[in-house]
Image (cartoon, rainbow, N blue to C red; front, top):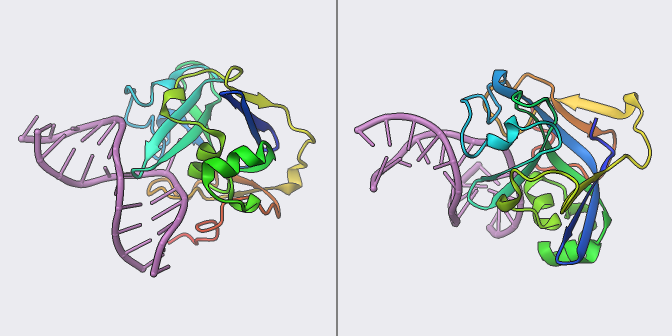
Length: 181
DNA sequence: TTCGTGATACCC
DNA sequence: GGTATCACGAAC
């Protein structure tokens, strides 16, 4: 479980980090909403690597979104990181995001990649170098994890594979409460 | 609620 | 080559 773990990046001597408060699971080639559903391609190739690889994709003309590959090689399971609670390098993040509101620095998948300085060139890299994954500072009790439908997809909308930490103010907001059709 | 934005995939 | 699609965000 990635919730509660910390993602830390080092670029140009600048350190930024945040605690994961919101994720979405994508279950490989059998999941119609997964980027791996239509088969292997140059873009989704990192998803087929073993757990620990990073898959970054570009979407809607301006956003990069970051996934952590979690399954065995060839399985294409990945977890989309949707929101972080900033923990280190707030000043650097504010500079990259051009705003000073801690609450909104990383409250969305495109926002957090911008705040952490992650872009397409990091797709296919491995955790541990420029991007590190640190263990949870404190474990999250099962009762404090909320599961709900994933956001922004048109297929398999009924699968409750979006996970957030209960009552955490740093989760993404604008579409968070959107009801299913 | 709408609109900007560009990489990708797939079809010619 | 052209174009529809897209796991979004910010401005209205």
